[in-house]
Length: 237
Image (cartoon, rainbow, N blue to C red; front, top):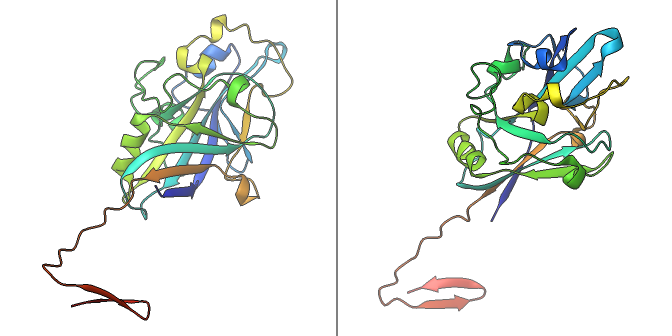
């Protein structure tokens, strides 16, 4: 079956920076910052309580399928890692973020989210999330995540006419469990980090791999005619 490997037209992170807790930063309707020219794509967190710094990140990726055709049978996402972190579990959700990605997409860019927490309202493209310890590879590795039937349905809906958009969030954000997570302080972002489309090397950008069904080949009824091969050519008479 043929596979279309579509490089992301735009992938960017948004984060909410607060001064009280990671849970409070996750619960805001809008983000406070967008990734803009950052080459990193983050869907995890930064915490340093001594300085009252609490950042919750979400990543938004877009792939233009408007020029493609076919019936989609499978979808995977390939990203390039920037570190070897083995946590947290990541979740991939249907997105409706704006093409340019803005701070207003922090919550509104998630299909189904009308408030926080949105645990049961969003559409998951990976049923149980991805354990980065088991499946995540290491620094400089490309890793591929297999999407579910909901992603296939979404891809078919936009095939030839629109964009396939996906958001990445972490387990504590999705499940509203920052309060019981036990996350400690650090002087850097914690968790797995990927490359965005702002990376200067196109080969590091996220790729959506869309598998389509084999084209149907119609039959020809000859009604008694004969096929001859003459000098490598097919002749029917």
